[in-house]
Image (cartoon, rainbow, N blue to C red; front, side, top):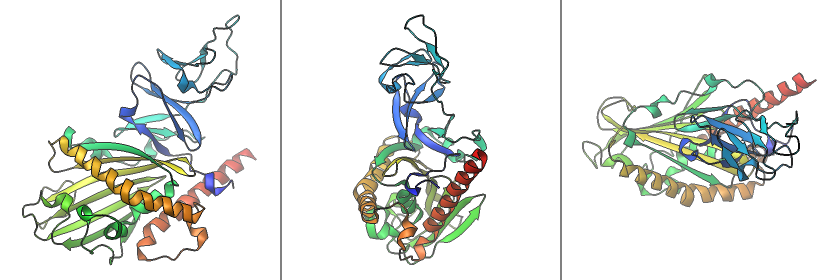
Amino acid sequence: MSDQNTSYLKNTWYVAALSTELDDGLLSRVLLDTQIVFYRREDGTPVALLDRCPHRFAPLSMGKRCGNDVVCPYHGLAFNSEGQCTSNPHGNKRIPAKAKVPSFPLMEKHGFIWIWMGDEVADENQLPDYTTLDTGHDNAIAYTYMKWPCHYELIIDNVMDLSHVDHLHGEIITTRGQLSPQIPKLEEDAGQLAASWEWKQTPPMLIFNDFLPEPGKEASHRVTVTWAKPANIQLSIGCSQGNQPITFASEEAVSQYDLHVCTPESKNSTHYFFVTRRNHNVEDADYNQIKIQNMHAAFELEDGPILKAVEAAMETPDFLSLDPVLISSDAAPVRVRRTLKTLIEEEHQTKLTLAS
């Protein structure tokens, strides 16, 4: 098997960009150690090509769009959305047979551009169901993106193990010490792993407190984080002062439905995409900015610096190879790591078998 440091699951969907990032221009982004150029056709269909002209290997992203084609900045060769050269302005203008650029299947869904970078035929059915993001008031959903200098599995670990909340984060999401003592409940279904916690606290979490019938009074809380390959984590969190189950659809619960997606740029850098939809204060568009500011503050000032320090101390992305001390809260992230490693090894072995 190739070096685990730079091995990724390939036959699966990764988020490549927010839908809003693709406009009339060209977007260059490195995903899984591969530089790709993105743009939209005139009908709005997103396109992904290897960001390298096959002639002199200039980045196509330094060029320009011309209709549905992208034109290389160096010698003017044009390539269509399938990667086929459509124009050679030199000599007899003959187009060489090898003048092609690899293209990648894309799918635009839930406000994201998803990319398939594997050898197998892209399977839209492999994308988990996140349709909750598509229902509700337009002002009750907010997106953001950041790039962080650490291995993507460290971010997965961080979201799958919420026992760090009371130790690392501030007052706005504290559980008043209720979360750490609990052993998360784990459930596996259709290749996905969910970890959940339930507790009561007074006062309620401050992100929800003002929207409850009796602010400041005791409320029941529930949070569930669900991992799906390769690096998608859906987090549902909410609280209630009623007797109904705490779900996003419950009228008695105040909750939010989040999706954290980590796409490797390289072994030491990750594209971190995030979206949150709430079932309260849904018409207040300005509240979106507050939610996103809080998310950035929590990660960039609290989670992020720890993850950078952990990465530097580990000197390898293979956490389990270091024989770490494990505690009850590690159950979910460790199982995710082992599952992902197995999937990568199986995919690699299948590729070797087919090649032999």
